[in-house]
Image (cartoon, rainbow, N blue to C red; front, side, top):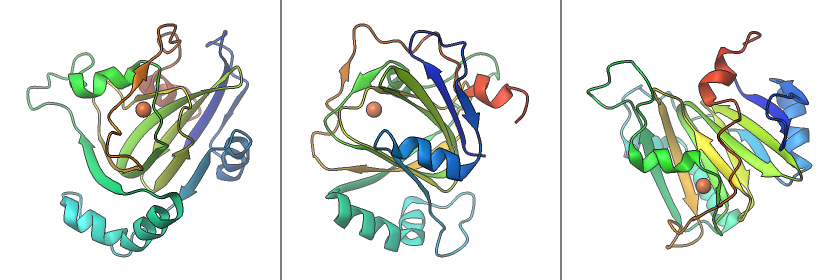
Length: 194
Ligand SMILES: [Fe+2]
Protein backbone atom coordinates (compact mmCIF):
# COMPACT_ATOMS: atom_id res chain seq x y z
CA UNK A 1 0.00 0.00 0.00
CA UNK A 2 1.30 3.42 -0.93
CA UNK A 3 0.89 5.93 1.90
CA UNK A 4 1.43 9.66 2.37
CA UNK A 5 1.65 11.29 5.80
CA UNK A 6 2.28 15.02 6.09
CA UNK A 7 3.59 16.52 9.35
CA UNK A 8 4.75 20.00 10.33
CA UNK A 9 8.55 20.20 10.46
CA UNK A 10 8.42 21.33 14.09
CA UNK A 11 5.70 18.94 15.31
CA UNK A 12 6.47 15.35 14.23
CA UNK A 13 3.57 13.98 16.29
CA UNK A 14 1.00 16.10 14.45
CA UNK A 15 -0.54 14.48 11.39
CA UNK A 16 -1.85 17.06 8.93
CA UNK A 17 -2.80 14.47 6.35
CA UNK A 18 -2.58 10.71 6.14
CA UNK A 19 -3.92 8.97 3.05
CA UNK A 20 -3.54 5.91 0.87
CA UNK A 21 -5.71 7.42 -1.88
CA UNK A 22 -3.41 7.51 -4.90
CA UNK A 23 -5.22 10.44 -6.49
CA UNK A 24 -4.85 12.53 -3.34
CA UNK A 25 -1.20 11.50 -2.94
CA UNK A 26 -0.53 12.41 -6.56
CA UNK A 27 -2.16 15.82 -6.13
CA UNK A 28 -0.44 16.65 -2.81
CA UNK A 29 2.97 15.73 -4.15
CA UNK A 30 2.51 17.65 -7.38
CA UNK A 31 2.05 20.80 -5.27
CA UNK A 32 5.70 20.46 -4.20
CA UNK A 33 6.98 19.42 -7.61
CA UNK A 34 7.18 15.72 -6.79
CA UNK A 35 5.79 13.03 -9.05
CA UNK A 36 4.53 9.61 -8.02
CA UNK A 37 3.32 7.25 -10.72
CA UNK A 38 2.71 3.52 -10.98
CA UNK A 39 4.58 1.26 -13.40
CA UNK A 40 3.56 -2.22 -14.44
CA UNK A 41 6.06 -4.85 -15.57
CA UNK A 42 5.90 -6.06 -19.16
CA UNK A 43 5.95 -9.61 -17.81
CA UNK A 44 5.47 -11.28 -14.45
CA UNK A 45 8.65 -11.12 -12.40
CA UNK A 46 9.78 -14.03 -10.24
CA UNK A 47 10.61 -13.09 -6.65
CA UNK A 48 14.29 -13.90 -7.20
CA UNK A 49 14.57 -12.08 -10.56
CA UNK A 50 18.13 -10.97 -11.28
CA UNK A 51 19.07 -7.45 -12.36
CA UNK A 52 18.97 -8.22 -16.09
CA UNK A 53 15.48 -9.71 -15.82
CA UNK A 54 14.23 -6.73 -13.80
CA UNK A 55 15.69 -4.24 -16.28
CA UNK A 56 14.11 -6.11 -19.20
CA UNK A 57 10.70 -6.21 -17.54
CA UNK A 58 10.63 -2.41 -17.19
CA UNK A 59 12.73 -1.53 -20.26
CA UNK A 60 10.18 0.64 -22.05
CA UNK A 61 9.44 2.64 -18.87
CA UNK A 62 13.15 2.99 -18.09
CA UNK A 63 14.05 4.12 -21.61
CA UNK A 64 11.25 6.68 -21.68
CA UNK A 65 12.06 8.14 -18.26
CA UNK A 66 15.80 8.22 -18.96
CA UNK A 67 15.28 10.17 -22.17
CA UNK A 68 12.79 12.51 -20.52
CA UNK A 69 14.88 13.29 -17.45
CA UNK A 70 18.38 12.95 -18.90
CA UNK A 71 19.21 10.04 -16.62
CA UNK A 72 22.42 8.47 -17.88
CA UNK A 73 23.00 5.97 -15.11
CA UNK A 74 20.44 3.36 -14.08
CA UNK A 75 21.17 0.70 -11.48
CA UNK A 76 19.46 -1.59 -9.02
CA UNK A 77 19.85 -1.54 -5.26
CA UNK A 78 18.72 -4.38 -3.03
CA UNK A 79 18.22 -3.93 0.69
CA UNK A 80 17.84 -7.11 2.70
CA UNK A 81 18.40 -8.08 6.33
CA UNK A 82 21.92 -9.45 6.80
CA UNK A 83 22.21 -13.28 6.95
CA UNK A 84 22.99 -13.11 10.65
CA UNK A 85 19.78 -11.22 11.35
CA UNK A 86 18.49 -12.19 14.77
CA UNK A 87 15.17 -10.48 14.25
CA UNK A 88 15.97 -8.01 17.00
CA UNK A 89 16.62 -4.35 16.48
CA UNK A 90 17.58 -2.35 13.42
CA UNK A 91 19.70 -4.37 11.03
CA UNK A 92 20.24 -1.85 8.24
CA UNK A 93 23.75 -2.09 6.85
CA UNK A 94 26.00 0.96 7.39
CA UNK A 95 25.85 1.83 3.68
CA UNK A 96 22.12 2.44 4.03
CA UNK A 97 22.09 3.66 7.64
CA UNK A 98 23.51 7.02 6.54
CA UNK A 99 20.42 7.72 4.44
CA UNK A 100 18.40 7.90 7.69
CA UNK A 101 19.94 11.35 8.19
CA UNK A 102 18.55 14.38 6.41
CA UNK A 103 20.64 15.22 3.37
CA UNK A 104 20.65 16.78 -0.07
CA UNK A 105 22.27 16.04 -3.40
CA UNK A 106 22.30 17.84 -6.72
CA UNK A 107 20.92 14.87 -8.60
CA UNK A 108 17.19 14.28 -8.70
CA UNK A 109 15.95 11.57 -6.36
CA UNK A 110 14.33 9.09 -8.73
CA UNK A 111 13.53 5.61 -7.47
CA UNK A 112 11.29 2.84 -8.73
CA UNK A 113 10.33 0.20 -6.16
CA UNK A 114 10.54 -3.19 -7.87
CA UNK A 115 9.65 -5.11 -4.72
CA UNK A 116 9.17 -4.42 -1.03
CA UNK A 117 8.68 -1.08 0.67
CA UNK A 118 10.71 2.01 1.50
CA UNK A 119 9.80 5.39 2.96
CA UNK A 120 11.09 8.66 1.54
CA UNK A 121 10.79 11.71 3.79
CA UNK A 122 10.74 15.01 1.90
CA UNK A 123 11.34 18.20 3.89
CA UNK A 124 9.65 20.94 1.90
CA UNK A 125 7.99 24.26 2.75
CA UNK A 126 7.92 23.75 6.51
CA UNK A 127 6.49 20.25 6.31
CA UNK A 128 7.67 16.68 6.15
CA UNK A 129 6.07 14.48 3.53
CA UNK A 130 6.56 10.82 4.44
CA UNK A 131 5.96 8.87 1.24
CA UNK A 132 5.80 5.14 1.90
CA UNK A 133 6.38 3.55 -1.49
CA UNK A 134 5.60 -0.03 -2.39
CA UNK A 135 6.00 -2.37 -5.36
CA UNK A 136 5.24 -0.51 -8.59
CA UNK A 137 5.78 3.06 -7.32
CA UNK A 138 8.06 5.47 -9.15
CA UNK A 139 8.96 8.57 -7.12
CA UNK A 140 10.64 11.57 -8.77
CA UNK A 141 11.92 14.37 -6.53
CA UNK A 142 13.81 17.43 -7.81
CA UNK A 143 17.51 17.63 -6.94
CA UNK A 144 18.54 19.56 -3.80
CA UNK A 145 15.34 18.67 -1.97
CA UNK A 146 16.21 17.90 1.69
CA UNK A 147 15.20 14.31 2.43
CA UNK A 148 15.97 11.05 4.16
CA UNK A 149 15.08 7.39 3.58
CA UNK A 150 14.09 4.48 5.79
CA UNK A 151 13.38 0.89 4.74
CA UNK A 152 12.68 -0.36 8.25
CA UNK A 153 14.48 -2.39 10.89
CA UNK A 154 14.42 -5.46 8.63
CA UNK A 155 14.67 -3.96 5.14
CA UNK A 156 13.10 -5.67 2.18
CA UNK A 157 13.37 -3.35 -0.78
CA UNK A 158 14.59 -3.68 -4.34
CA UNK A 159 14.68 -0.43 -6.29
CA UNK A 160 15.84 0.93 -9.62
CA UNK A 161 17.79 4.18 -9.23
CA UNK A 162 18.19 6.85 -11.89
CA UNK A 163 21.03 9.38 -11.93
CA UNK A 164 21.94 12.30 -14.15
CA UNK A 165 25.53 12.59 -12.97
CA UNK A 166 28.40 10.13 -12.71
CA UNK A 167 29.30 11.68 -9.32
CA UNK A 168 25.84 10.98 -7.92
CA UNK A 169 27.29 9.64 -4.68
CA UNK A 170 28.19 13.19 -3.56
CA UNK A 171 25.65 13.89 -0.82
CA UNK A 172 25.66 16.61 1.82
CA UNK A 173 24.31 15.87 5.28
CA UNK A 174 22.48 18.74 6.95
CA UNK A 175 23.96 19.66 10.35
CA UNK A 176 20.52 20.60 11.70
CA UNK A 177 18.80 17.55 10.22
CA UNK A 178 15.36 16.92 11.70
CA UNK A 179 14.88 13.23 10.88
CA UNK A 180 15.12 11.48 14.23
CA UNK A 181 11.80 12.43 15.96
CA UNK A 182 9.64 11.56 12.96
CA UNK A 183 7.78 8.23 12.71
CA UNK A 184 9.90 5.54 11.11
CA UNK A 185 9.00 3.28 8.19
CA UNK A 186 7.95 0.63 10.72
CA UNK A 187 5.95 3.14 12.81
CA UNK A 188 3.98 4.21 9.73
CA UNK A 189 3.21 0.62 8.76
CA UNK A 190 2.20 -0.29 12.32
CA UNK A 191 -0.23 2.60 12.80
CA UNK A 192 -3.85 1.41 13.04
CA UNK A 193 -5.72 1.84 9.81
CA UNK A 194 -3.15 0.00 7.72
FE1 LIG B 1 19.27 10.85 -0.98
